[in-house]
Amino acid sequence: MSEIFAVSSKLQEAYEFAYKNNITSMESIELFHPTRPMTRQEFAKMIYNTQSAIIPQDTSNPASCDIDFWDASSFDSTLMDFIDKVCAKWIMRWSHNLFHPNDSLLRSEALASLIRAIAPNQILSEDNTNKQWWDAYQKYAEEHGIIFQDADFEKPILRGEFIEWAYILSEGKSEKIPEIFYTYHKDFTDLYREYKNNHFMENVLSDILQRIQIPKGLSFKYDSCDEANAFYSPENHTITLCYELINQYKQQIQEHPESFWKWALDDLLTETLYHEFWHAIIDMYDLPITWKEEDVADQISAFLLIWERDEASIHAASAYYISAMSDTSDKNDLPYWDEHSLDLQRYYNIMCWVYGSDTEYYSDFLNNETLPLNRALSCEWEYQKMNSSLIRILGDKINF
Ligand SMILES: [Zn+2]
Image (spheres, rainbow, N blue to C red):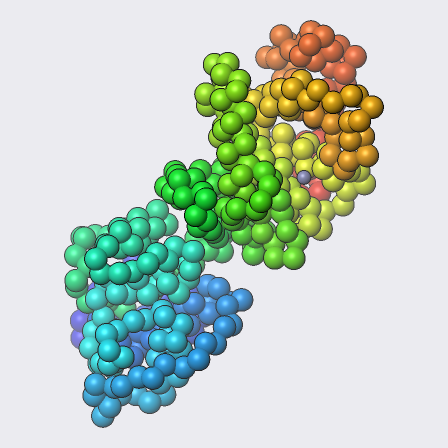
C-alpha cells in the first residue's frame, strides 16, 4: 500500500466495529484501505453484514431477486448471495435489475441503502417526483451524528466513510434513541404529520436516556387504537401512544383554557410515556415490586419527571384533578376495584412527591386544597424512600 492516510480515532473505532461484526474481513485498517471507493459487489456484502450487526433480530429472507449482471466476468461469485439478499430485501436498488458489480457507489445511494437496512421506520415512498424522502434521509443521518464534510452526494462512497456511518448509526441503535414507529392512519393524517415532524417522542426519550438505560429491544409506536389510551405490550416490547389519546388531551385542554394549559399538552404526554416506560422497565428488567404496578409506575414516572421538569408533574397531577372534578358519577359507582388508583388519589400522590422532593420550595402546597397537612407530613419520607429504593433496584442502570 503506497498511499498515506490519516487514521482518526473515530475511524479506528469504526474499523474495529466493522471487523468485529464481519462487515469487513480485512485484518488491518491499512489493508481495508479507507480512502478507496467501494465496488457495488463489495458494498452488497458490507451492507448485509451491517444490517445483521445492527438489527440481529431481522432474519427475514424474502424470495430471491432475478438479477442480470452487467459484466459477469469481473464478478466475484462468492458475493452473489449477498447481492441477491440485499436486492430481495430492497436495501440496494438499481434500475432494470441490471447490476454493475464493479461500478462504484454514490454516497447518496450508500446512505439510502444504510437507512433502508437499519431504520425501516424511516423509509418513505421513494418516487422520483417527490424528493422529500431524500431530505428526510439526510436529516435522519445528521440527527444521528453523521457529519457531512461537504454536501456532495454524487461522489463515490469511500470505504472509511461507509464504516464510520455504519458505526455511528449502530451506536445510535444500540445505546441511544430506540426505534420509534409512526403508523399512518387516514383518520389521523394531521397528527401523524405533526408528531413525525415535531420530534416529541425523540426528545422525551433523550431525556430518559440521561437518567436511565433504556432496555435493548424496547420500541415506541404512534398508532390508532380505537380508544384514547397508551399502553405497553410485553409480547413485543412496544409502548404505543394512541392518536386518540393525543386528541383527547387536546380537547380537555381546550375545555379548560386556564393559562398553564396552553403548554400542558407536552407535559401530559410526557407523563403518560414515563408511566408506560416504567411498565416496560418493570417487565424487561424484571424488577421486584410488591404493590399495585399502576401505583409504582405513577410513582417512578413522577420521580423521573420531578428530576427533569417538576412543573410537568404538577400539570399531569392537575389533569387528574380536573378529570376527577368533572366526573359527575355517584361516589358509590367509582371504580374502586380498578388496578389504577382513583384520579383524585393520583393527583394527591403526585403532589405529595413533588412537595416531598423540596419541602421548602413547595411550602405553598400546604393547604387543604392542594395538599392537606395530614398527607404532607409523610411526603419527604415517601420521596426519599423512593429515591433510595430506585437506586437499589436499578443499580448501574440509573444515573440520578
Ligand atoms: Zn399503567
